[in-house]
Length: 74
Image (cartoon, rainbow, N blue to C red):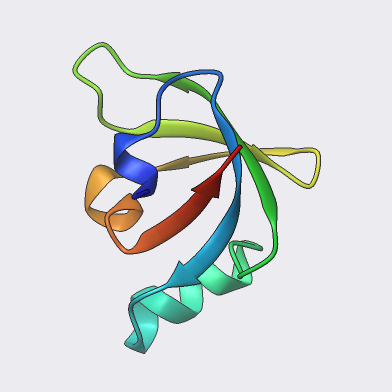
């Protein structure tokens, strides 16, 4: 499942990050790498950005960034 399509409260493991270049590097440096456990903890009123919890940290990602992350949901 694509991270953008996950619902609030849904958890999963990152399966792949499908982007390279500077955006791909930035995403990976934030800890969004295959095998990492994430939970969607909220969304803005217009559903962009998405708020996630990973490794005890809270991050927000634009939907345009979340589009490149596939997650194996539980």
